[in-house]
Image (cartoon, rainbow, N blue to C red):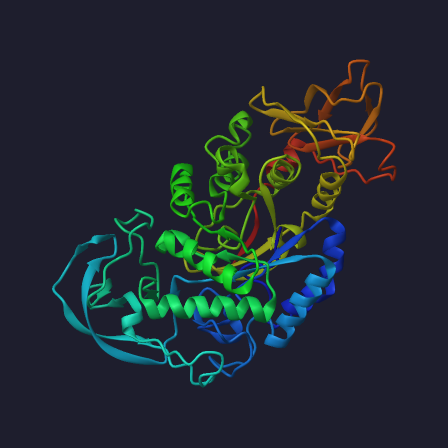
Length: 510
């Protein structure tokens, strides 16, 4: 899978056209599915990333929030992108935000009780009348696709500054959802107008939208945003109903941002295994390894991760739009470690790997940092090695997997290949000095070479099909039999000192 956007993707309406242009090439590289950003109108119109959700039914068709198109293009361009992807053989996963709505069209008077934003189980005042932005009439759409208007009764809570600070207000006759994350006592409320997914009109409208959206776009599945803040059983019921009505088996992956793998497993159990989850604990391990100064124990890189506990439902990732520099969950995997991380998700048997657009293509952008200053960010592309990993994934990453996780600074593994994909593969990586692993790959007296170009020459296996496979300091090498890829690959072999001095994301402050 490729996450085909990042937080700072250009707001020029070009992304859907870019999908059309690149779909066939992506398939040729080995990408099988694209996760696209929220396709509907957000609170700030053409500049909205999509998570400040305003109108699910406006896919860039109506003049609302200051524009007709969304950040990524028009409805017609979206449909063209989905068709081009389908024709090329790509599956499309759409981003769906069911936790909240923002940017209401009018205020309403409603009784509400203030709660401590740091502990949503503790009220900090008596019920009082407030004026809340909870009426969504969608005047630009004027009832097209759906006549429903949203009112305060469709929401659980809002937030407001009551003069003493921002409070979370639980609306009249409402209660916070169960089966949500326990952070802050109860993490049902996140932002904006919190949808009451127990309300029959809300459930009906979200289901109608799902059926309409799938039939309109032909998508193959969904990435659900902020699932830790929504009653978990809602997703199970929604997927079952929408799949039944559309006659399409829908893939789903949820964003449950927690580093506690047992919490993720609990969500999977409650939802009866109806969706995969992003492996946030694995991302966190990558972040820690990349910032450890070479002191991380690589033998533990998969400890307490979802791909270790439940590989069939683990979507493995290195980075995403929330963890990238200057974003709310910033937990950067430093550039020197990203090739190692991508080898760990792309060249192993377990998990459904997701490649991040900004890691593959690179990115440049500016935003304010936590101190309020302007920061310019440049993320270098890792396309060179990811392309080679993708090619090797298709041709050599098959069959039995044998791990050699026996040194804290240097690990390796082999893939034996299978009848349809003979040849095998040996991978070795180091976060310290040059590493070497004696590993068996199943092919005796065969020459292997390093497709990354980090190590020149060949390794020849002995009569027992074992070879001494090496890597350079702070890097990964991927060894495959010589007869298949024969072209000379360029060398990329900085010293460990070079790597350590360039580990940080390039930031310019002014």
